[in-house]
Image (cartoon, rainbow, N blue to C red; front, side, top):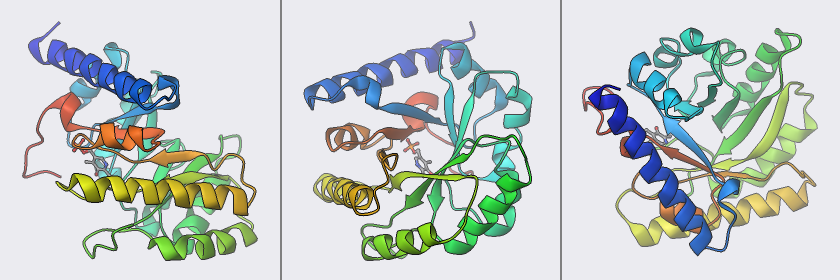
Length: 240
Ligand SMILES: *Cc1c(COP(=O)(O)O)cnc(C)c1O
């Protein structure tokens, strides 16, 4: 094992243990929380090392970066989640490469994704989350919280085969623990409201929490935590 390989393996076991502890402390079953290892900007070798250490779920935020890795790992157990902003014209790259997308925020994107999935008969449905910009920060993508039920109402009135609506995603308030917790609580309440109002039994996923705040997110109900830095180390700031 190389030095980086053992470092990634050690980091993974630290993060997994901390997920377990946070879940148990919150009275939750640790198996309800899936760790999405965010491998954006990382090399194929680093992803391979995480796979060797038993990690199978990975997140990428650009199609371009993802396609340097995903096709080469087709034969492995890797499951890929698209977590970045997606221009609808790039939707065609999602089916066949990604199993999940966390960042649906427009009807146009939803339509294009559905069309793209339909062009691959036999492919499993794409699991979709709506991205919510809870704090209404201009720098972030996503629907405002007040728009979500109206958006979902329209979405469900459309014929969009190939897509499974699974829940909500958000990004916390960087460096502000109180606000971050409020954001996660708001997302959970919104997800629960959507699930019962629209009778969507499988709308049960909450993607929230990154390296700096995944413990808080788990305390507030996260089912998917997106962790990059704590697993792979600090990213080169020239990349994203
Ligand atoms: C980069 C990124 C992450 C991971 O961030 P870390 O702080 O490195 O854990 C999570 N979610 C999204 C949407 C990201 O772009």
